Image 1 (cartoon, rainbow, N blue to C red):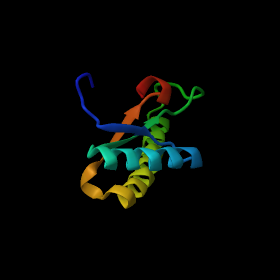
Image 2: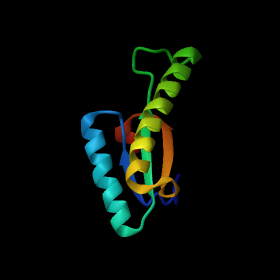
Image 3: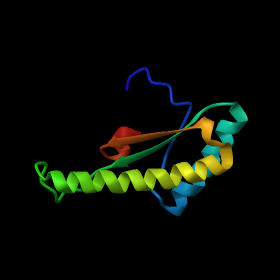
Length: 96
């Protein structure tokens, strides 16, 4: 992803704190005329073997649903054309 421009990048995990952060990021992006990229980092957890494809698929699908919730909220604030999704596999600390 080197060289990718995200405008304002906000991590979103579905928590109330993440919603507050997303609200701030959306307002900041709007004020700057920038695109808002809403990012969710998903991971199946440490108890899952890396060969367990079903667990990885389930974690990814849950991540997609969480990201969609964040996108819906951000689009209420900014409108649909200025908000982009970013779903990444890994921990939030590594990916953001």
